[in-house]
Length: 371
Image 1 (cartoon, helix red, strand yellow):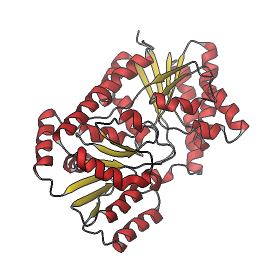
Image 2 (image 1 turned 90 degrees about the vertical axis):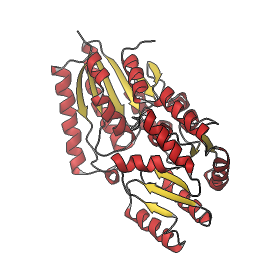
Image 3 (image 1 turned 135 degrees about the horizontal axis):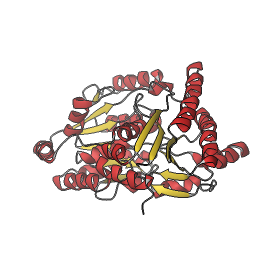
Image 4 (image 1 turned 180 degrees about the horizontal axis):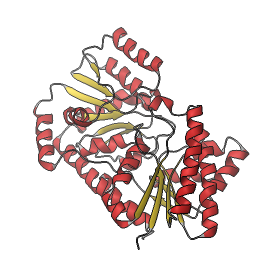
């Protein structure tokens, strides 16, 4: 008989890093063939701007989730539990409540429990109070910890109650085959009169979009065009963004595309010369947008946040220790990385480490606890 796998996880909507990974896990043919699978969605926010806010709707959804998990444990009786864990806030306390169910279940039968963290912030949370530390140690007690890279393990240095730690780098899907990639590269480097710079992520200020906008102001007399794509978290940020464009006369230098997907997203990546992401978002762990950029052969200009130095090396982009050095990083990348050789290298990095097929193989091996 196949092992029975209960997955309690995020999947879209809303669209963010964890939900993208959840979408793939839920639809993975290999996972569904290797295991008898039962999926439960963690429903809390229906859009990006609802994340982190408390409402009666969310309280109801927590209760609903609790009873759905209880029902699955009684009826489905899993051998393996995979759970997308939160680091702090209301979601953490929800997770602690849910964990009591499978902790009791584990007293009655043998079960392997995996907590997959798609973000960071555990150390900051447990340092805030003794209660947070005690609850986190209880929550992580006797489970298998899954993190995105070795660079994130230090975040758990004060909570060592877990059994094992596994590293599972994210993966993303490529929308283009090799024939299409060759055409994209030929078109990209056939005309370098104007460089297209792409920022594609949620429009959260700490993710660096405003730093990129300030860079656009510095380079507005050069042949550089900046493309921004993503959903807004705050209306005041949106107003500030467009007011800056107006005040600095950047209407011909900057294009905002909003939230994109499908063909529009593919076109932005295809037409870009490099990807820029100077994030200082406190929970930034393993940005999928960088992996997507690699799949299109795009070098990147990024900060050293989270696992980014694990993803990007000296041949695939420029990593900044200080996001105030964005202009200097821009000049370095423009001079040394805008070429076909770099494009081929970035594309190969994607296939070697960050394709969905590689992620799928790694996940199945991990859940089977294969060495």
